[in-house]
Image (cartoon, rainbow, N blue to C red; front, side, top):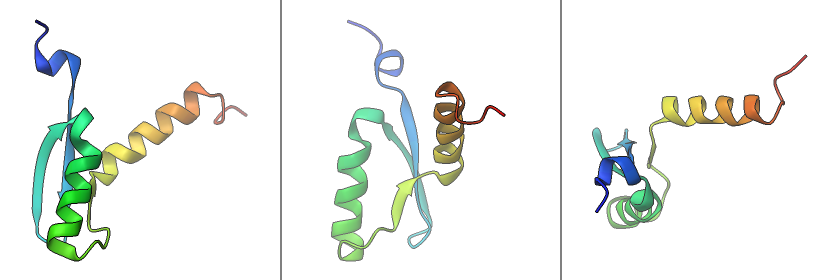
Length: 70
């Protein structure tokens, strides 16, 4: 059986409203964030993937798609 860290990398999730940060497997990010926001913030979007990581991923995708070329 493959090691979980190899097959499902962990993603940092932060909630500035709670002052919390955790890492969850990529496959569980959506469920974890939704559950946190519903349970603790009445469904308002507070917890999210670490914005720095989200920006890095967006840049990598844009570069891969050729959107950043001159």
